[in-house]
Length: 320
Image (tube, rainbow, N blue to C red; front, side, top):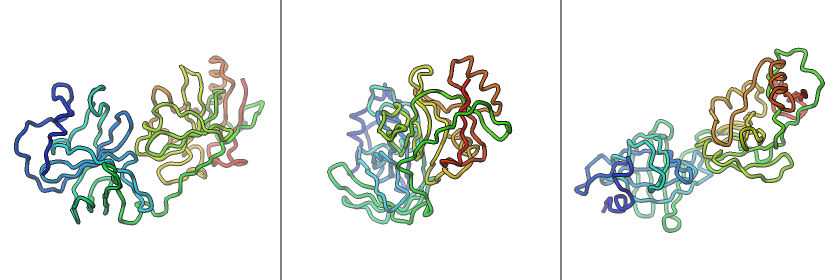
């Protein structure tokens, strides 16, 4: 029998904005609502909730809902939540259970094909997620969620595992055809390639060795799967300055022109206490003068229509 005793025992209505309904009979619904909430708690995860017998039966998904039947995702069974939680979004205070920001990532309706203690088979109809899924227990509270339909993107590119960073060639002067290039500061930091896949980022240095990831970077990417290029600098403290995007959500960008990669990187709006999207400009002389004033090594000119490929990228380092 569904109940909310465990849910209430973990929350104090005076301290959390979450709905904490009084004890009493559970409401009756249609058992057809689902919600997925992006939860930036101690560890980023997605809360997957299905309306059933007057409550929201809930699982925590560290990597979200899978979009390919070849890959199952962990689903940790948690306490039932009240139906009112389907519309909850807000900040749970730090120190409280589940402290952190909660956002509604998707919601919609679902159909039940089978519901037993050993198998929950459903069809989702949401704005972002749709299709047939099954959840099944593996060990205690640990369940798995499996997509039963074909992949959402059958032609998706696999995420590259070992990208070698493009090294700019040193030149004495700015390009003559200045309008064919974008211009960035040369930061003089440690080159890092970051791999974000719905969780803590994996970071590799230019020599191929593992490196420490900027704290919170993977969580900032949220549901996105991305490969980033940048440098760890001491600008305002240790800051990862991100200046290229090499892969995004099933699509390799290595053959896309630099200008397009920068546009897509800007759309991610990556800005935080330990990482920033590096600026880029169309005036190389102004960037070189600013670099000189800020005691930076120089300016990097990158051809706008060039891919991220050795020998074709056309990156030029012009010292100040």
